[in-house]
Image 1 (cartoon, rainbow, N blue to C red):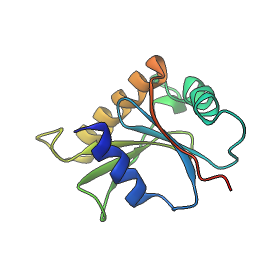
Image 2 (image 1 turned 90 degrees about the horizontal axis):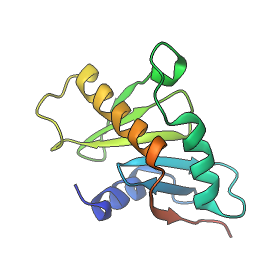
Image 3 (image 1 turned 135 degrees about the vertical axis):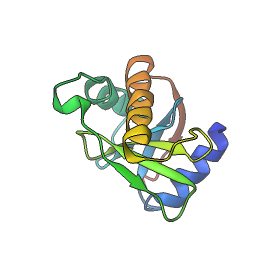
Length: 123
């Protein structure tokens, strides 16, 4: 999985008028009210809502089997933070395995906060 392929996947999946920021491990932060420095705004959200804390809502996830891309989106306790898991990243494809893997990627992104792409759709 390359950053370019993940960027192309999020472009395919998200509304074309939305601004969003992609982090190094596939986590996408959709900015419903983009303002100022989009990367900084996304980092602030992911810093707060990205790290996993077992036994709290920060440990919860849901997996979405994608119709328009090969793989899954893994949600978290913030509705605008999703993590992409490509179908070639895992051998198993059950919801628990995919969800835990995606949650782990979100946790890593929430701690490292490395932005790899900003999609700025502000007019």
